[in-house]
Length: 291
Image (cartoon, rainbow, N blue to C red; front, side, top):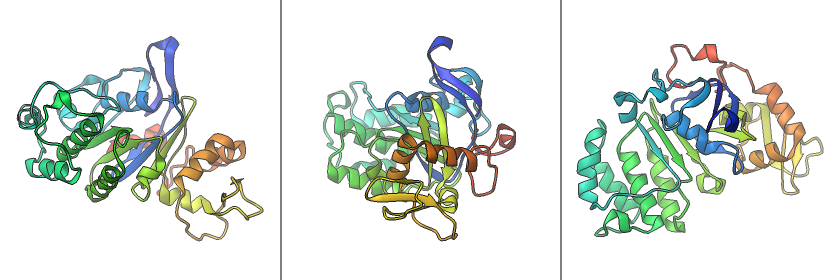
Protein backbone atom coordinates (compact mmCIF):
# COMPACT_ATOMS: atom_id res chain seq x y z
CA UNK A 1 0.00 0.00 0.00
CA UNK A 2 1.21 3.48 -0.81
CA UNK A 3 -0.56 6.59 0.54
CA UNK A 4 -3.89 4.73 0.47
CA UNK A 5 -7.02 6.79 0.99
CA UNK A 6 -10.23 4.80 0.85
CA UNK A 7 -13.87 5.22 1.73
CA UNK A 8 -17.03 6.35 0.06
CA UNK A 9 -15.96 9.39 -1.94
CA UNK A 10 -13.34 12.07 -1.41
CA UNK A 11 -15.46 13.82 1.20
CA UNK A 12 -16.10 10.57 3.06
CA UNK A 13 -12.64 9.00 3.17
CA UNK A 14 -12.42 6.54 6.06
CA UNK A 15 -8.77 5.53 5.63
CA UNK A 16 -6.14 8.22 5.26
CA UNK A 17 -2.56 7.78 4.13
CA UNK A 18 -2.05 4.07 4.80
CA UNK A 19 1.22 2.52 3.69
CA UNK A 20 3.24 -0.64 4.19
CA UNK A 21 3.07 -4.33 3.37
CA UNK A 22 1.35 -7.41 4.75
CA UNK A 23 3.71 -10.37 4.58
CA UNK A 24 2.63 -13.81 3.43
CA UNK A 25 2.81 -16.80 5.75
CA UNK A 26 1.06 -15.09 8.67
CA UNK A 27 -2.38 -14.91 10.23
CA UNK A 28 -2.93 -11.21 10.89
CA UNK A 29 -5.32 -9.80 13.42
CA UNK A 30 -6.92 -6.60 12.12
CA UNK A 31 -7.93 -4.60 15.19
CA UNK A 32 -9.59 -1.25 15.72
CA UNK A 33 -12.60 0.45 17.25
CA UNK A 34 -15.91 0.73 15.43
CA UNK A 35 -15.52 3.19 12.58
CA UNK A 36 -11.72 2.91 12.47
CA UNK A 37 -11.81 1.52 8.93
CA UNK A 38 -11.33 -2.24 9.31
CA UNK A 39 -14.13 -3.26 6.95
CA UNK A 40 -13.22 -0.49 4.50
CA UNK A 41 -9.64 -1.76 4.37
CA UNK A 42 -10.70 -5.35 3.82
CA UNK A 43 -13.09 -4.37 1.04
CA UNK A 44 -10.33 -2.34 -0.61
CA UNK A 45 -7.93 -5.29 -0.45
CA UNK A 46 -10.66 -7.55 -1.87
CA UNK A 47 -11.42 -5.24 -4.79
CA UNK A 48 -14.95 -4.59 -3.56
CA UNK A 49 -14.13 -0.93 -2.95
CA UNK A 50 -12.05 1.38 -5.13
CA UNK A 51 -9.38 3.50 -3.44
CA UNK A 52 -10.07 7.22 -3.39
CA UNK A 53 -6.36 7.66 -4.07
CA UNK A 54 -3.12 5.78 -3.59
CA UNK A 55 -2.12 2.28 -4.58
CA UNK A 56 -2.80 -1.28 -3.46
CA UNK A 57 -1.04 -4.34 -4.85
CA UNK A 58 -2.01 -7.92 -3.93
CA UNK A 59 0.31 -10.64 -5.16
CA UNK A 60 1.10 -8.55 -8.22
CA UNK A 61 -2.53 -7.65 -8.98
CA UNK A 62 -4.47 -4.41 -8.55
CA UNK A 63 -7.66 -5.40 -6.68
CA UNK A 64 -9.73 -2.60 -8.23
CA UNK A 65 -9.09 -4.10 -11.69
CA UNK A 66 -11.13 -7.14 -10.57
CA UNK A 67 -9.39 -9.50 -12.96
CA UNK A 68 -10.64 -13.08 -12.98
CA UNK A 69 -7.38 -14.55 -11.71
CA UNK A 70 -7.32 -12.22 -8.71
CA UNK A 71 -10.98 -12.81 -7.83
CA UNK A 72 -10.52 -16.58 -8.08
CA UNK A 73 -7.66 -16.48 -5.57
CA UNK A 74 -9.26 -14.06 -3.08
CA UNK A 75 -12.03 -14.74 -0.56
CA UNK A 76 -13.66 -11.97 1.47
CA UNK A 77 -16.00 -13.10 4.22
CA UNK A 78 -18.20 -10.21 5.40
CA UNK A 79 -19.61 -9.94 8.91
CA UNK A 80 -23.18 -10.17 7.62
CA UNK A 81 -24.06 -12.36 4.66
CA UNK A 82 -26.98 -13.78 2.75
CA UNK A 83 -27.22 -16.82 0.50
CA UNK A 84 -29.37 -17.81 -2.46
CA UNK A 85 -32.13 -20.41 -1.97
CA UNK A 86 -29.83 -23.37 -2.64
CA UNK A 87 -28.89 -26.60 -0.93
CA UNK A 88 -25.28 -27.11 0.14
CA UNK A 89 -24.47 -29.41 -2.77
CA UNK A 90 -25.95 -27.00 -5.34
CA UNK A 91 -23.99 -24.05 -3.92
CA UNK A 92 -20.77 -26.04 -3.98
CA UNK A 93 -21.40 -27.20 -7.56
CA UNK A 94 -22.13 -23.68 -8.83
CA UNK A 95 -19.58 -21.60 -6.94
CA UNK A 96 -16.82 -24.08 -6.27
CA UNK A 97 -15.98 -24.32 -9.97
CA UNK A 98 -14.81 -20.70 -9.95
CA UNK A 99 -12.18 -21.57 -7.34
CA UNK A 100 -9.23 -23.42 -8.88
CA UNK A 101 -7.99 -24.80 -5.55
CA UNK A 102 -11.35 -25.70 -4.05
CA UNK A 103 -11.37 -29.04 -2.19
CA UNK A 104 -14.62 -30.97 -1.76
CA UNK A 105 -13.03 -33.19 0.89
CA UNK A 106 -11.80 -30.25 2.94
CA UNK A 107 -15.16 -28.48 2.60
CA UNK A 108 -17.06 -31.42 4.03
CA UNK A 109 -14.45 -31.91 6.72
CA UNK A 110 -14.74 -28.30 7.85
CA UNK A 111 -18.55 -28.43 7.87
CA UNK A 112 -18.56 -31.52 10.09
CA UNK A 113 -15.87 -30.08 12.38
CA UNK A 114 -18.02 -26.97 12.87
CA UNK A 115 -21.14 -29.09 13.54
CA UNK A 116 -22.96 -27.47 10.63
CA UNK A 117 -26.70 -28.17 10.34
CA UNK A 118 -27.16 -30.08 7.08
CA UNK A 119 -30.53 -30.44 5.39
CA UNK A 120 -31.53 -26.78 5.65
CA UNK A 121 -31.60 -24.54 2.58
CA UNK A 122 -28.88 -21.90 2.78
CA UNK A 123 -31.21 -18.90 2.78
CA UNK A 124 -32.99 -20.35 5.83
CA UNK A 125 -29.92 -20.86 7.96
CA UNK A 126 -29.47 -19.20 11.34
CA UNK A 127 -26.75 -16.57 11.72
CA UNK A 128 -24.40 -19.06 13.37
CA UNK A 129 -24.85 -21.65 10.64
CA UNK A 130 -24.34 -19.03 7.94
CA UNK A 131 -21.00 -18.25 9.55
CA UNK A 132 -20.08 -21.94 9.79
CA UNK A 133 -20.94 -22.51 6.13
CA UNK A 134 -18.97 -19.53 4.86
CA UNK A 135 -15.96 -20.35 7.06
CA UNK A 136 -15.90 -23.88 5.64
CA UNK A 137 -16.31 -22.72 2.05
CA UNK A 138 -13.72 -19.94 2.39
CA UNK A 139 -11.05 -22.23 3.80
CA UNK A 140 -11.82 -25.02 1.30
CA UNK A 141 -11.15 -22.55 -1.53
CA UNK A 142 -7.50 -22.39 -0.37
CA UNK A 143 -7.18 -18.75 -1.49
CA UNK A 144 -3.96 -16.75 -1.70
CA UNK A 145 -5.72 -13.94 0.18
CA UNK A 146 -8.30 -14.77 2.84
CA UNK A 147 -10.09 -11.87 4.53
CA UNK A 148 -12.50 -12.67 7.37
CA UNK A 149 -14.55 -9.91 8.98
CA UNK A 150 -15.72 -10.86 12.50
CA UNK A 151 -15.92 -14.61 11.69
CA UNK A 152 -16.73 -15.64 15.27
CA UNK A 153 -19.76 -13.35 15.66
CA UNK A 154 -22.81 -15.56 16.11
CA UNK A 155 -20.84 -18.71 16.92
CA UNK A 156 -21.40 -20.57 20.19
CA UNK A 157 -18.52 -21.52 22.48
CA UNK A 158 -17.96 -24.98 20.96
CA UNK A 159 -18.06 -23.60 17.42
CA UNK A 160 -15.48 -20.95 18.35
CA UNK A 161 -13.21 -23.70 19.65
CA UNK A 162 -13.67 -25.64 16.42
CA UNK A 163 -12.92 -22.52 14.37
CA UNK A 164 -9.68 -21.96 16.29
CA UNK A 165 -8.61 -25.56 15.74
CA UNK A 166 -9.37 -25.35 12.02
CA UNK A 167 -7.59 -22.04 11.51
CA UNK A 168 -4.59 -23.23 13.52
CA UNK A 169 -4.16 -26.14 11.10
CA UNK A 170 -4.68 -24.05 7.95
CA UNK A 171 -1.53 -23.92 5.82
CA UNK A 172 -0.54 -20.25 5.43
CA UNK A 173 2.50 -20.96 3.24
CA UNK A 174 2.40 -18.52 0.34
CA UNK A 175 -0.86 -17.04 1.64
CA UNK A 176 -2.06 -14.00 3.54
CA UNK A 177 -4.82 -14.48 6.13
CA UNK A 178 -6.38 -11.43 7.80
CA UNK A 179 -9.02 -11.76 10.53
CA UNK A 180 -10.84 -8.66 11.75
CA UNK A 181 -12.33 -8.99 15.21
CA UNK A 182 -13.44 -7.18 18.35
CA UNK A 183 -13.18 -10.43 20.28
CA UNK A 184 -9.42 -10.77 20.56
CA UNK A 185 -9.70 -13.69 22.99
CA UNK A 186 -11.31 -15.76 20.22
CA UNK A 187 -8.00 -15.62 18.31
CA UNK A 188 -5.73 -16.38 21.24
CA UNK A 189 -2.57 -18.22 20.13
CA UNK A 190 -3.62 -18.10 16.47
CA UNK A 191 -2.19 -14.77 15.34
CA UNK A 192 1.42 -14.22 14.33
CA UNK A 193 1.09 -10.59 13.25
CA UNK A 194 -1.20 -7.63 13.84
CA UNK A 195 -2.48 -4.48 12.14
CA UNK A 196 -4.05 -1.85 14.40
CA UNK A 197 -6.14 0.98 12.98
CA UNK A 198 -7.02 4.12 14.91
CA UNK A 199 -9.22 6.89 13.52
CA UNK A 200 -8.58 5.82 9.93
CA UNK A 201 -4.82 5.51 10.22
CA UNK A 202 -2.55 2.50 10.58
CA UNK A 203 -0.91 2.76 14.00
CA UNK A 204 0.88 -0.59 13.99
CA UNK A 205 1.65 -3.25 11.39
CA UNK A 206 4.13 -5.81 12.66
CA UNK A 207 4.81 -9.48 13.25
CA UNK A 208 4.76 -10.77 16.82
CA UNK A 209 8.49 -11.47 16.60
CA UNK A 210 9.11 -7.81 15.77
CA UNK A 211 6.83 -6.65 18.60
CA UNK A 212 8.44 -8.97 21.17
CA UNK A 213 11.86 -7.74 20.11
CA UNK A 214 10.90 -4.20 21.18
CA UNK A 215 8.30 -4.72 23.92
CA UNK A 216 8.00 -6.94 26.99
CA UNK A 217 4.66 -8.06 28.39
CA UNK A 218 4.30 -8.92 32.05
CA UNK A 219 2.75 -8.15 35.42
CA UNK A 220 1.54 -4.71 36.39
CA UNK A 221 4.18 -4.18 39.08
CA UNK A 222 6.90 -2.97 36.73
CA UNK A 223 7.64 0.63 37.70
CA UNK A 224 9.08 1.61 34.33
CA UNK A 225 6.16 0.27 32.30
CA UNK A 226 5.04 2.17 29.22
CA UNK A 227 1.50 1.09 30.06
CA UNK A 228 -0.20 -0.71 32.94
CA UNK A 229 -3.88 -1.39 33.54
CA UNK A 230 -3.65 -2.77 37.08
CA UNK A 231 -3.21 -6.38 35.97
CA UNK A 232 -0.82 -6.30 33.02
CA UNK A 233 1.95 -4.08 31.84
CA UNK A 234 3.92 -3.33 28.68
CA UNK A 235 7.54 -2.24 28.97
CA UNK A 236 10.48 -1.59 26.70
CA UNK A 237 12.31 -4.87 26.09
CA UNK A 238 15.73 -3.76 27.29
CA UNK A 239 17.17 -7.18 28.20
CA UNK A 240 16.33 -8.99 24.96
CA UNK A 241 14.26 -11.72 26.64
CA UNK A 242 11.25 -12.93 24.66
CA UNK A 243 7.78 -12.67 26.15
CA UNK A 244 4.54 -13.72 24.49
CA UNK A 245 2.66 -10.84 22.91
CA UNK A 246 -0.53 -9.99 24.78
CA UNK A 247 -2.62 -8.72 21.88
CA UNK A 248 -5.54 -7.52 23.97
CA UNK A 249 -3.29 -5.53 26.31
CA UNK A 250 -1.39 -4.07 23.35
CA UNK A 251 -4.62 -3.03 21.67
CA UNK A 252 -5.87 -1.22 24.78
CA UNK A 253 -2.48 0.40 25.32
CA UNK A 254 -2.45 1.79 21.78
CA UNK A 255 -5.87 3.34 22.20
CA UNK A 256 -5.36 4.67 25.73
CA UNK A 257 -1.70 5.69 25.93
CA UNK A 258 -0.06 8.48 23.96
CA UNK A 259 3.27 7.25 25.32
CA UNK A 260 2.76 3.81 23.76
CA UNK A 261 1.68 5.31 20.44
CA UNK A 262 4.77 7.51 20.41
CA UNK A 263 7.02 4.53 21.12
CA UNK A 264 5.40 2.52 18.33
CA UNK A 265 5.67 5.40 15.86
CA UNK A 266 9.37 5.76 16.64
CA UNK A 267 10.26 2.06 16.66
CA UNK A 268 7.98 0.49 14.04
CA UNK A 269 6.67 2.94 11.44
CA UNK A 270 8.94 2.99 8.39
CA UNK A 271 11.25 0.36 9.87
CA UNK A 272 12.23 -1.99 7.07
CA UNK A 273 14.24 -4.47 9.14
CA UNK A 274 13.94 -8.18 8.45
CA UNK A 275 11.88 -8.74 11.59
CA UNK A 276 9.32 -6.03 10.90
CA UNK A 277 6.47 -6.42 8.44
CA UNK A 278 6.17 -2.66 8.00
CA UNK A 279 7.76 -1.72 4.66
CA UNK A 280 7.89 1.51 2.78
CA UNK A 281 6.15 1.41 -0.59
CA UNK A 282 9.36 1.02 -2.58
CA UNK A 283 10.14 -2.20 -0.72
CA UNK A 284 6.98 -3.76 -2.17
CA UNK A 285 8.47 -3.97 -5.65
CA UNK A 286 8.82 -7.62 -6.62
CA UNK A 287 7.59 -8.88 -3.24
CA UNK A 288 4.75 -11.33 -2.69
CA UNK A 289 1.94 -10.36 -0.35
CA UNK A 290 -0.32 -7.34 0.11
CA UNK A 291 1.42 -4.04 -0.58
